[in-house]
Image (cartoon, rainbow, N blue to C red; front, top):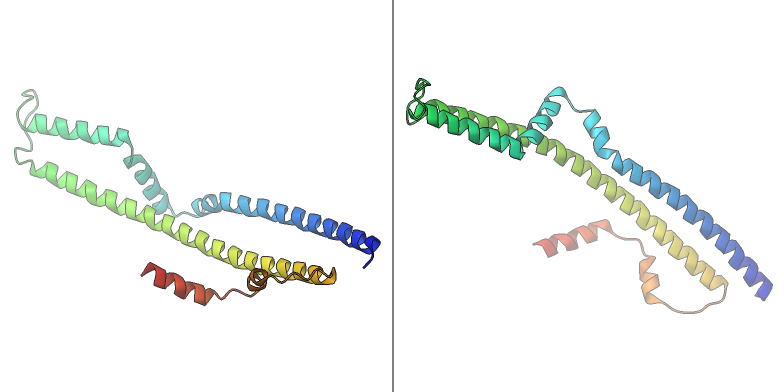
Length: 186
């Protein structure tokens, strides 16, 4: 191959790779936007019950909620232990009504937290599946690019054996990877 052909091939390859790079950059930006809106989309499809659960979960996990509870329980104990004689005792020691209220609050809060966590886990599972599919697609595209580079290398007459490159162009076997990871985890 003469120098003119090599220069022309190099120039053409540069244009092709530039176009691929621009296309991939646009696709990556679209993917980022899709990921940014993933939770927003999920939130827009929440049921009224899920909205309530999320509201209660976010509010109950604050210092203000803790402060309100501490003040409420302190006042309850002070009133019902007779420390504040201007208020009549309505739940004498051992504060059975207070115990019931605290237990009910704990049960209700736990249910709301579990509902929110379940929805968040569903979103995370969906995101993980999308990630997996994108990774599989990227693996196929990278393998194809490596194959094309090998062909260009051969076309240019560059004879440099590379066992690592040959191994990289082989199709990945997801089942083998899954089995290997399972063994490593165990």
